[in-house]
Length: 199
Image (cartoon, rainbow, N blue to C red; front, side):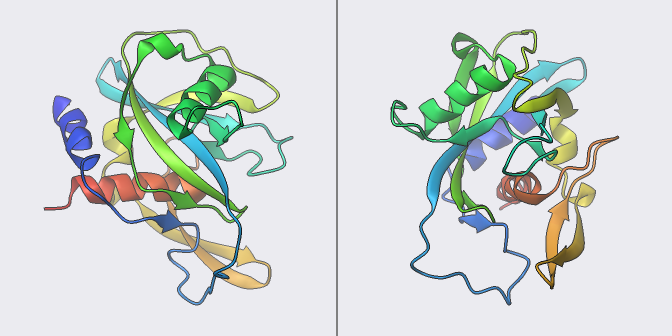
C-alpha cells in the first residue's frame, strides 16, 4: 500500500491540467471575463488498518454552496491566510479538527474550477498520527475515511448525468458504500488518479 503514497508523491511533481465541473460537458462555453474566487481543500491521507485512507466530509445540508455533498475539508481563502496551503490547513482544522502539527504537506495539484465560481487548489497532506474528529456541525454533517486504493482506482469511476438549468450535465462519480462521491470532489480525485496512471 506504500506504492500509492509513492505514486502520489510522484504525481505531485507533474504539472497536470486544470480541471473544472464542466470537463465532461464540451458544449458549455465559459465566459473569459468571469471572476473566480480562490479557495483550497485539503486531501488528508492517513494510515489505516488496511493501508492508507483518505479523509472526506459530508457537508451540512444548511450550507449555501454544495449542501449535503461529499467534499474535502476546505473553503475560500481569507485575507489572514498566508497562501492557499495555509487556507487548506486552517479549514481542515476548523471543520474536522486535524491538528496542523500532525500534517506533512506533500504538494498541490492543478486547480479546479467549480460551478459556484471558485478556483480550488487541492493540497495533499499526510496526517502522521491518529486524531479524533472534532466536527464543526455548522459546516460538516459527518467526517469519514475511505480507502485511498478505492478512490485512486480508475475502474471505480462511472459517468452519470442529471438535468441542470434545463441542460443535461455529465460528471464523474466514485461511489463508496453509502457515500455518493461526485462533482468537484470526484473530478479532483479522477485527475489525481489519471496523473498516477500517466506513463
